[in-house]
Image 1 (cartoon, one colour):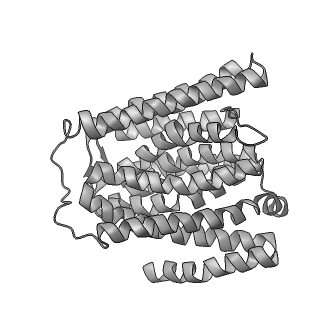
Image 2 (cartoon, rainbow, N blue to C red):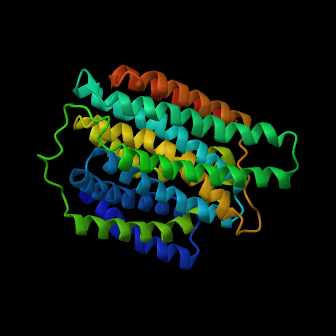
Amino acid sequence: MGKVFAVMIAAGLPLAVAGSLLHWPSVVMFVICSATVIALSSYMGRATESLAIVVGPRVGGLLNATFGNAVELIISIFALKAGLIGVVLASLTGSVLGNLLLVGGLSFFMGGLKYKRQTFSVYDARHNSALLIFAVIVAFVIPEIFSLSMTEAKTLNLSVGISIVMIAIYLAGLFFKLVTHRGVYATENNESHHEEVPEWGKKKAIIILLAATAAVAYVAEGLVHTFESVGEQFGWSELFIGVIIVAIVGNAAEHASAILMAMKNKMDVAVEIAIGSTLQVAMFVAPVLVLVSLLFPTPMPLVFTVPELVSMITAVFLAISISNDGETNWFEGLTLLAAYFIMGIGFYLL
């Protein structure tokens, strides 16, 4: 698979450049750019996996989530620049649904096919549950409720204020987990990180991460420019493009990494990628995009549609109910996947 992605990158980058200069059809550019971003994401996933072996499951999961979300953050910034506010908000919804239901579901399902019962830190699960409720329900629902009685200007000010608070809480949460309470809730499990040899050394992995991120930034701009034309040709709404297409392409690295970790029975890392990435999207990526949007002609308030809010709240409570016991199996993974596909059908028809 690694050779396939290497070929995709070697072919995709020159084609993306040529297509941009020669103004190839939007559908062709959409396919080329999407495939190239996914291939680049795979290298980002492999690099973060190597680093995870060196630094441990928590920091490793955080790295996976961060660089996985970096792809979507880059795509979203270019979409904001193009004035595609609906696509950006929908992509945030898609990230929450994709990480909790698709990534989490595939991880639990694929890992569960190999191991009848997989466990992970119940303390981390409970800690993340409270943060999920705070991040998704409090931070996303409150702007929607208050916006009903506010002007657009006041709604934007509320969104900016909430964004600043969310970023502060996210950074405080990292300080809590990685500094003041690092190792306090550690438990013995079935994972052996120290026995593994990373695919790449620390220096090489960091170089690959930086190079892949830079390449993604270039390709993402071309990808964003195809959204409107492709949507018109296939009958896709901005909501569907953001919730499904952008979220899947932007989170490809996390999808691959989490599934791989689950199949190696490294459930602490897999869960940290799925849930940690969701928290990062809600508490860091979304607030950063709100603040960045102030630099563009059309700023973005943190106000979602009712279907988006209901879907995210449902995903949060379903993920919490399944993960709070600190163990999982293939059937629970299948349940998460079923919920994702039901919501996907709804957004497509909507």
